[in-house]
Image (cartoon, rainbow, N blue to C red; front, side, top):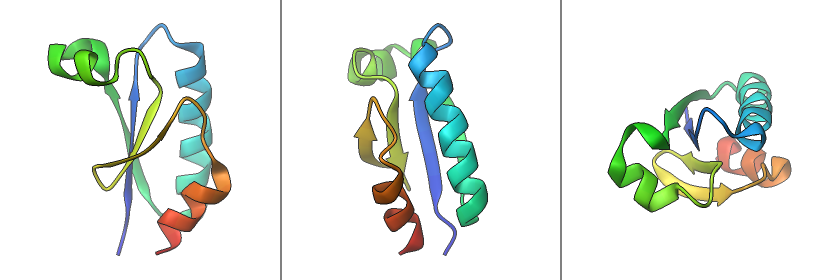
Length: 79
């Protein structure tokens, strides 16, 4: 099964950009796909995630926020 990681992000967030680079690297190594959703593009996403970005979803389920926990993310992608 190929897993998918979504990074809930915003354009002006330096931490988000750093997290995106980490997710890209890890997903590349683990054979997972990934994408970025801009929380500011949708009022519902902004209300849900706005003060916690970056937020990471694995297969649509919230996995963590603010910092990529590499070992934990790798474990989720290895399942």
